[in-house]
Image 1 (cartoon, one colour):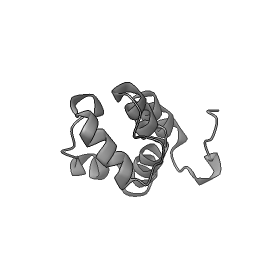
Image 2 (cartoon, rainbow, N blue to C red):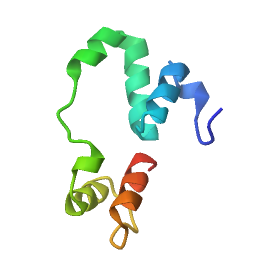
Image 3 (cartoon, rainbow, N blue to C red):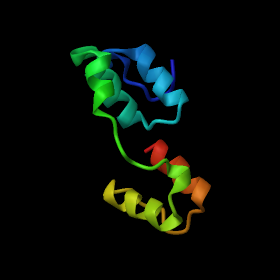
Image 4 (spheres, helix red, strand yellow):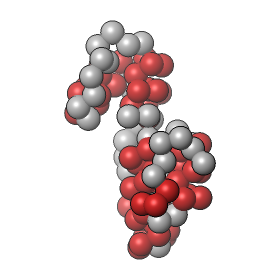
Length: 89
């Protein structure tokens, strides 16, 4: 079991694990997997998002996102470090 995963609150732990492998943050993976368990995968999948991949964003955009999420210590990070920080917050 992945470290830091609160399995008792996950409604679909297998989907959570797959989303984490694909690079989703813990928060996002939990939110999607729980919604899919509650409403069905098709319903959740239709929502879709229009956000760019972190790799396609500028360092400034990544820092803005870190600020939106209330993260600290991002100002001196390189792009790859920012992406890791955002995915694992």
